[in-house]
Length: 420
Image 1 (tube, rainbow, N blue to C red):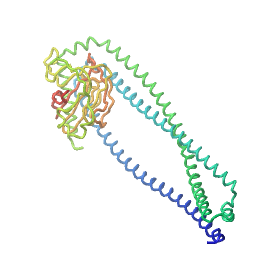
Image 2 (image 1 turned 180 degrees about the horizontal axis):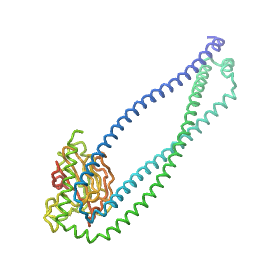
Image 3 (image 1 turned 135 degrees about the vertical axis):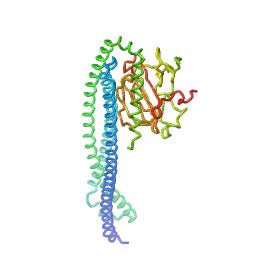
Image 4 (image 1 turned 30 degrees about the vertical axis):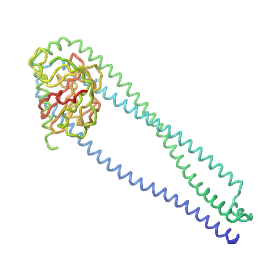
């Protein structure tokens, strides 16, 4: 091969290769971007439709439960009881605490997201600085070499093989310069987007903190209101706790509630104490509830202050569940997977939450201070659902817990895993 032939044909072919490879790179990036944009749009559309169906189903369930509650209130006795004076205050305390819990979760999420964005910003700035430094060196070298660098290499009487290696090296630099420039433009655009997102996140955090402060003030107000009311009606509460007829009415009201929920869901669409130290988890999720007998844990740690079927103090009314005596504010956990079918205040049981576990099985959690979950929420075993309180006029802090199958009370102790 002559030096003239090398200079004319080789340089032309190398230039064409550089141009073709740059165009291919741009086409490839555009193709991938288009593919993932279309794919993401299809996935988003599918998820949106599924979320819409789920939301509609939840709204229907909540409306049916609300209608059932309203019907029960109309048909129940109109006789006012002392605990009823606490209803609105205890409901409000539960609702505000639930809002505060959700605000705290959103704040943790926003803080984490802001931290991630700040890390992204730092990394992008480092990448941009590095790319700019590389491009600066490349442009400086090209400036020193001049625009005729290829021609100089061909005409300076060097070995043709060495010339070919140099040309390949320059082709590599030219190709990667296009890549660097494209990457730099992308990084600058991404940096701007990340900066906007970070500013929005800071604004959201400020809003969350402001809302949290408002809710805390409301909570303190409601707690003071409840305490004043308790002071006024404490004597009446003590008297009514000993009334057999009141206990029976409360039991009947709860039984009626459970039966009505069961009917709705069935439609198409001794004083010895011992401590519980085990808590539920999600290892048993996926198994039919009927197969979990002998495998469950109670929903809160504490002393079991009564046994199923034993008579209540100074009355012939028998316990249909367990009272787990423990300190205020302890977290109550779902004993197994299921769906919340009731979450509201009920006379005699305060802030009450009921979970449907399928096949006619339900678990009931009463006398809570806070209900974290609402009707329609899907739960896993071990999910936090409430905090311990003494709502409903109970003099002791603790959780009232029942298990039922087809509305019939079951002995929870027979369902517990053996403690080792």
